[in-house]
Image 1 (cartoon, rainbow, N blue to C red):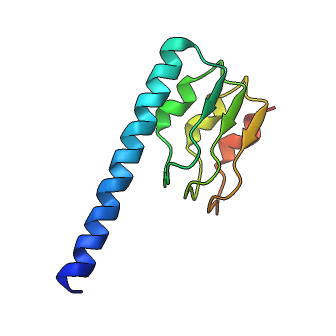
Image 2 (image 1 turned 180 degrees about the horizontal axis):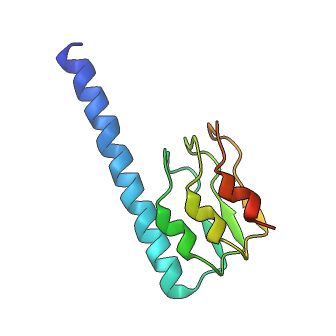
Length: 102
């Protein structure tokens, strides 16, 4: 692997870190505001922060156009969730805790 290829990998990793931190900040603000809807679309997230599960009043979550391959176990805590928009991701697995949502 040459230096240019390594730089590209590092740049993507840093961008993923930035978008993850941005998602964490949006989630923290949503917790403070007791939001019932949250849109994290188009952030190129590869993973969601576990803190998403603390949004227990959330009824609509939009995650369209990311790069998610799975959802965190904390999803089971989203007991008020009635609508999940998750198109255009790379989901390969869904945690078992997802089945606990009704």
